[in-house]
Image (cartoon, rainbow, N blue to C red; front, side, top):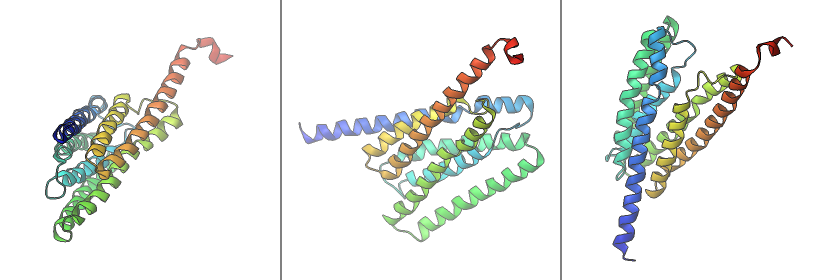
Amino acid sequence: MPEYEVFSSHAVFCEAAGVAGNLLAFVLFLSPIPTFGRIIRNQSTEQFSGLPYVYGLLNCLIRFWYGVPIVSSGIILIATVNSVGAVFQLVYIAIFIRYADKGRKIKMLGLLLAVFSAFGIIVFLSIQVFQPPNRQLFVGYLSVFSLISVFASPLFVINLVVRTKSVEYMPFYLSLATFLMSDAFFAYGLLKHDAFVSVPNGIGAILGVVQLVLYSHYKKISEETSRRPLLESYA
C-alpha cells in the first residue's frame, strides 16, 4: 500500500475522532441545562455544587492554551472545543452565583477570581520562562492534572448519591456525555501520539463507566422502592 494512502487514512481517522470529540463535548456542555433550568425555576441552588463548573472553566482555559499553535502544533481541535467550553462554564457559573445564598456566592466569586489568576500566571510563565518543546511539556502536565481533576470532581456528587441512595443530583446525560467524549478524545490522542490528550481522557472514560454503573444501580433501587406496596412499609 502506498505510503500516502496510509497517511491519508490515518489523518482521516484522526480528524474524525477529533470532530466526534468536539461534537460530544458540545453535548456535554449542554447537559447541565436541565439542572440550571431547575435552579432558575426554584431560584435556589439547593444541594447542587458549583465546584464542577469552576473546575470545568479552569480545565477549559488550560486545555485551550495547550491546543493553541504557540504551545502545541497540530491539535487545534483541542483549542476550539475548549474555547467554546469556557464560554459555557462562565454562563453556568454566573447563573449559579445569581441564585446562590450569600455564603456560597462569595465562595464562588473567590474561586472565579482564583481561576483567572491561575490561568494568567500559567500563560505568563509558559511564554516568558519556557521555550519549545519545554513549553508544551509545562502546559501539557498542567492540562493533564486539570482534566483529571474535572473528571474526578463528580466524586463529590457520587458521595451524595451514595449517602442519599438517590440519583437526583447526578444527571445521567452529564455522565454519559463525559464517558463518550472521553472515548473520542482518547482515540484522538492515541492517533496524534499525544499522551497529554490520550492519558487523561482514558482515565476520564474509566471514571465515566463508574458514574454510569452507580447511576444504574441507584436508579434501579429507587424504582424498586417506588413500586413496593404501601402496606409493606408498615410490615
